Image (cartoon, rainbow, N blue to C red; front, side):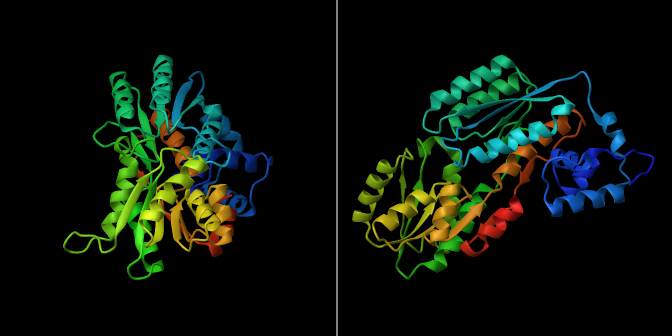
Length: 356
């Protein structure tokens, strides 16, 4: 490090890969911070010769940067979309003293009009930047074009739509995540077992994200001739209502009694595994993300694998990317893939502790 350049709290954050808010708590000895993180921060302070009294010099005075986020709504505090939202809120809190202000908005995954309504409200506010999860492809494309006309920078998280001028995409390699799910599920099945893909979206035709995951999954099972070596079916359930799930699964299993495994393309694997338990079905299940329902079902042994996409990190990193663009005049990396963590029952508690 160039000693003529004064070390900032951002340098500490870069060195440790720990949020500015957590570093601030250690510096000022307030709030709870894990021992491991505290030791990493203290080491960075020594190595980088950081003087906490210089913190004030790093603040950006007299300028506010309004960031609007538009993410799917979390219907319960345990729902997947509560996690990226929490990450965005944490990121905004970390940079609050630097002039970052967050306007957080959500839309229903089962109602395109709610997306359009909130997108219009964001355009009326004319923010400095936008964080977007573009799960409705048509409506997102319209919104993106409006942002580009106004020269409002935007960052995608969790999903992306190609061919646009987003500053960055922060999230999983979506197609690869489906392929990995296929590779994990296949060895669990007996010869001849068929597979069911369950999509829980309003309409698969307007969800490029879900379609890409499914294509990645199917790609794993293709032979050199391009034909699947297992029978693979798919259903789309346009609801997370348990009665609707029961009705659709019952119809499918009556017609397809040879199903041995299920791949759920979002965080609702627990709804499927609960159905299997209630109906005494021995069917293997793989899905995404450590929401509370999936944690409970995995502890029971009814979900075999969970693939975590680090949703909280996606949110915090999106805010950081916009902050660097506004304040540090730093262009973020165009694609920031998050690691895909493969979790089993035996490693789940350890993973949760480390993430916390």
